[in-house]
Image (cartoon, rainbow, N blue to C red; front, top):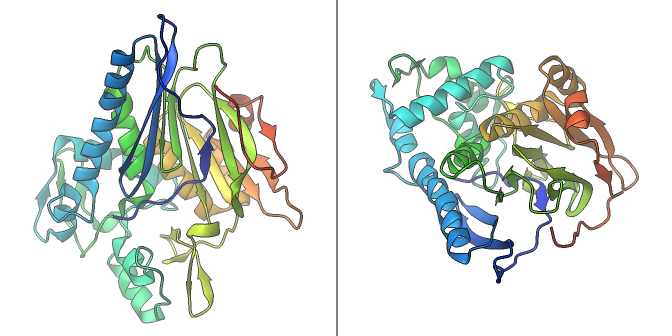
Length: 342
């Protein structure tokens, strides 16, 4: 499975644990879900700090084993290959219940049942320009309504050869499972391929400093915000987009049209639930700034669009929930994002 690279840049340096009973940061890096994960926590005990990092990492690795479409033995791979009614595990059933909620709420601007469309456009294999007939056939094999999900019985009964594409929700689910695995009384941060989840602020700080990259210059931060709870996910074009026959192909597809989304900036969503942040950043990217901000306002969702301009600083347009959540938001005018110790 190819996991989408998010745009958030965590501005927290790696550090080793403290001594003398003082609380200090402990960090760990690993490679999982096809991307890098960085985990940071604070504790006065090195043993406790390192143990907590392991507690946070294990659910992420387990989520990868369940959802990976690169593993033939994963539950999602077996679901995608199933032709007969398929019984879901309790955890995957709960996940699909959440996915159904956001698919319905977004009027299918987010729809994870687009495996056939992703294959048609070569989203995970370098990109291609399919013919209109290929796209039409892929649309007939895509869409949540064809998955036949029965939440009460935890079963799938497909009406077409539908496959889930987990790139728009897998990281969020992994982060939620990690959060559930540790005490809510501990301070930690996880950066999973750019999607960030945190719990509590580091000692002496109002939050963890997190940067949001310029939508066209990912090595530079355009915004800095302080996070003390929840998760942020960013969807954008830029370096993840594909090219075929000299044409740009957005790596984010519009499930309603079967074609790549047309927006060229980025959108960041904060939500207490990481799965929701992941799914909604995709949905709002597909909607674009005008419709997306109207939807975010109507649903009290914290969303921030960065819209490319002729000059370096992008235009920043946020929902009222986002500006309320992050009143100390700092604009960097496209400077390289760096920060000191948290």
